[in-house]
Length: 284
Image (cartoon, rainbow, N blue to C red; front, top):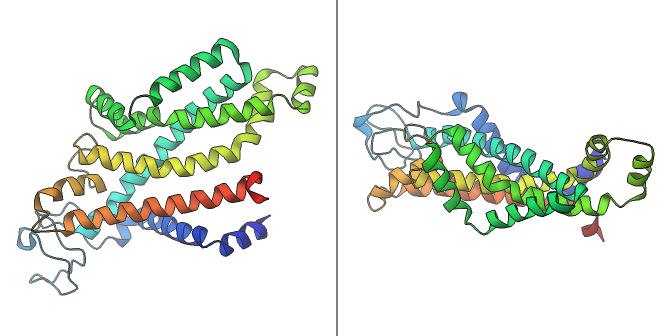
């Protein structure tokens, strides 16, 4: 199985590109303290709005991605910003997955009014733009990373629930589920021992694609001033701060924006490969 995955991965250029991009960002973010050349919060008024260059500044520092309006190193802030974005994205996807998978399995397995209630709630949420719902919820709950994770999870559970529910509707009609019922196996064990393993790969695919969405949503909220505190280095905060200098210091917006684009492309390419590899319907 491992050899098959490795061969398929190497043969698919999307998997290679997406995997390299995503793994690189994860590793750089994990070891930010070792990789970042400078303190992302260190103010140096002698290097304010220094353009990207490999040439040393008068004080001997080198800023290959330039500095911001307070003389802080843009590269260091991008590296540490990856920690925040990835942490928020992973936690939000995990929480959304727990909520969505649980509700989707319950809706698909029990049906009836429970299914109708959960799916109508999902339809109502889908009718509201996610970014608008997130802005309203953050305005009510306040700005903090914990609140951002909760808000993003609430806006993202629907995708998990709908896909899982559809799979459960098919799986619960199979013979081995009927046999488990006849043997007196409890509903809880049927759901999590017999049904969940069969929807797990679908959940992994959704989680991969939702990761990119969560990172983009967090950056959007930060850009609008509804995300993490302005003192926290995040990609969205960097773009928001740099928009006032876009004509005189283009790198403040361009560099973090390109980083977001590259990360999202990498995650989407990796997610497409996972879908093609794990979905048996696409192998014929």
